Length: 485
Image (cartoon, rainbow, N blue to C red; front, side, top):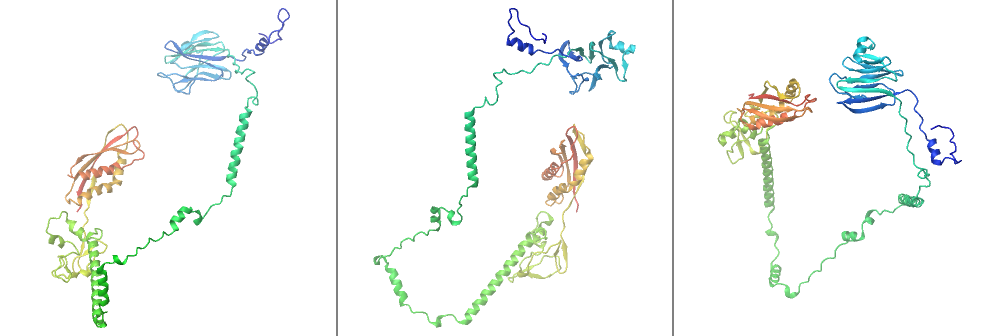
């Protein structure tokens, strides 16, 4: 079709409106240089075809950022197979690539171009300049690239709605519905403004209490009616008792206690109160002194040697501040060791030992409390499995930092059994996040399962930052326990 003014049809009739519209909306032929058309051939089938409307450098490789993704041995991550230099395309090919290309001098193999020197040597690859009439194929690791230069396809016009559907925005408005929405909005907005500005009266104090509730709280209930007994209901016994009370004479002043007796009773009551107070203080001091382990109480002295196997008298002889009453005067015999006849203490002067690690033993002699301690050594160990990689020195450093908690597990059971000793081997896994899992006791020669369980719980709380690389690592370390004193 031409862009000239349409002529009249035979018979003098003019063309219709549809014909004029089609003549007006005609596709202009493409203009400008040709564009590159590339197809990917795998296994004898075309898997992808693309027309590059924009003249730009085309890349291939195993990366997703390339124009065409090609996988295979020797394929680089990114290779510019069609390089745009100015307005001309350059074909780049390596010694591992094969194929043919059509040039002005005829169709030639890439190997022939490389040997004859027709292709420019760029170091790692060779280059051949292409023109708009060039075409060919390039084989890269079993994948064939077919290319040629074609005219750019015409740009399709955007679809447009018919004239009837392209009516104005104002004509498409439903004015009745719009007016209803606007009216509703104005009413609701005005009501909110009224509620916001209204000065509502708020009752305060007793006025805020409802009348029914106020009446229940403040109103006093009427008293119940009193029943008046009649003369017939009065029992005869009450009348007789009243008569006897009237007949008894009032006591004379001679029957009241004398003044000396009152003073004597006051002195007895005062002495009883003082004795009770001293006894309460002595009992409190005895209980505190016996139960306080930090102050070195009597109970701590009794249990200091381990299990109780002796008689009661021998056990109490080892406790400071505790003895056997020797008389009714309330005095106590002090424990042995301070010399013969080393004094007695009254019940009122008994008290707990003071702070510190010494206790009164005799006249001027002090006894130091022995604290049971244990020795903990870490044996040789290391990683025994796992797919990750982790430095064993970091594990040893963590164990040394937490050795106090591990030693406490042993000393806790050492107080019960002073001869407790042995070795506990712990196996655990360190995860990539740094946490410890799979903790278990593989060896326990102490004979106390509580020691192994406590040590396993202490290792379970280890945290490493950063953790192993490549997966979890399993370690095994032995802990040797022995009493220190």
